[in-house]
Length: 296
Image (cartoon, rainbow, N blue to C red):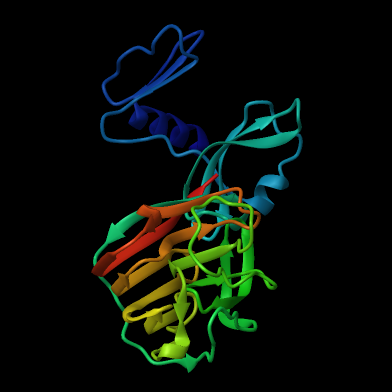
């Protein structure tokens, strides 16, 4: 008897209207639309459908065709999903939050507030047209759908996640391009020569899960034009997988240069606007650019 009274009380609170063919749930007592089996009408409330983890979702026995849920995929990633019983799989309708690594197949680039990080680090000794050995990032970083924990630094102004890539001598090339180097992030891919002076160094800062890996080119001169130098850095962000290029100054005299990113096989890439590529005298300072993953 108590259960019946409680049921009637709750039903009255919702001011639901039950008809022979359809149901209305609202705050004003209005009849449901005749075309709707269920008509929910509020001006200050929404519909909250079940939210499940992937494990909980996969434990549903014989899900009905068209069943709707919100799936928590982890890493602050959520998807409204519907069950497709023809293909016996869950289909994404709309996702939001951070990208899961295998979803990252493209990037947006935008100018952000200047944010050059003054830091020391481990020096990398490179001569003209040389590439370093493997350098540990210090955390897992996702780039174009693949997770990496090491990079290689080219003396010509870029890092790559793939071993055996060329140094990029002797000028930057517009992306996308299938020729080596690939799988790179370029702060100023051009013909640079560390033998003229300056330094290249890297460091990992912060605490998990918000660490940063920073590679800095500190006043590295342009080949045959040593007074034209580059002071810029690449920052890789843990968890968000953002990429920042911070430019204290970039001074190119005559070589072709490129600033941007490219995927593993050179089939996709994104350049900083107007610099994919450019040739001839160019100078800029106090700039920061962010490459943000786009979920596929």
